[in-house]
Image 1 (cartoon, helix red, strand yellow):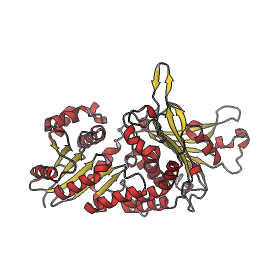
Image 2 (image 1 turned 180 degrees about the horizontal axis):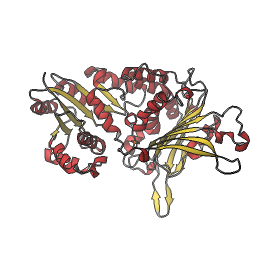
Image 3 (image 1 turned 90 degrees about the horizontal axis):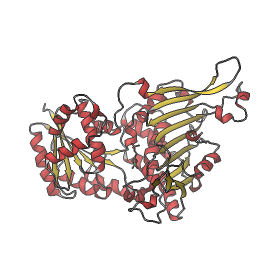
Length: 489
Ligand code: BG6
């Protein structure tokens, strides 16, 4: 049969995401010989630019892990030779038809598969999808579209977006990215759990006391205030990235590793979640802080943010799954910007050993003596397990030590960027790491009511200094469920 070719069009090619993530990821895939033999990459955006200018832009913004490698320049030139640019409006059938013509020139005699990456603001998603699908879809192969959040800002707007997209595309053609699913340690979560006998049987309320999903960044909304103020940290991080991790963590064993089997289980667990109560949510916003002679700005110092904005830049929440496996186990989430550190991790705190012979060695604070499994998603990927151990010597003193799997020490191969894995999967039609529309609905159903309550009652955020550990309210929330945040212990 005919050989096939894939044309990848980055719609919104001059934007931040395209420059920082998409082009570097495509290049890394090329460098690793993962792209199909025949491929073409098109940048599409409104600004006038020549192919040479696009190539120059791409080469300059190459920030990926490859740029320190041997042979990088040669590969880079080959790669750039396959990159082109087409200027056009996002809602112009005519401009997309011109693109179609150009794509065809590269595809002659081959089955043409087409992938569009919409790296544009959500208010123009539908127009672009309409034009791409009617004027530039493949005549004899597949057409797929990658979209990335925000998918609306509540159940209604998300459902409306889904409905509009489905006028032009089938569910099979839509690849909704949650880039956290492309992260190495998130992918590993199910390997860790389902292929290790020392974990699999323990994964339930019987042995797990609580689970913590923690995201922190040590910088504010610098430059993104306009976007951020419309969404806030709950929509930006919790409703998607942390909830996706929770679903993978807590789902029942899927029938197989097929995308539909996995996503069925994720949807099930999301639908088993108890509605989030307002009192189980704490919100915060960063205020300015001066350290030495550096003044770190408040969130509302951002020119694009209203001075009286109540938008949370920090949130903590307690969630529960009302099913047999997780009944009563608090899943605590915490996400914040402008905190003291940049980190994303999952912490699993286990129960006490019943009738522990060594209880007296722990004094009155038995919580400190329980096992804790930490999955550090980033930076400096690691999985470690806190265990009790005898301090070597003649006495009997116990100590908490770590069994430590430190990726940098154990594996010499670099960890690919999340976008590399996701782009490759989209090209190969592997849907496991993409969000199905019923999953998206379930995620919004969980968060929409409490978001509405927060916004309608105009709850004031707790203010915390830029670079601090966040509002103290997060501790009270955890304490209410007998939990201590593991990252601050
Ligand atoms: C994005 C959020 O989805 O994820 C950003 O919109 C956030 O606010 C980013 O900074 C974090 O991603 P990563 O991969 O840098 O942890």
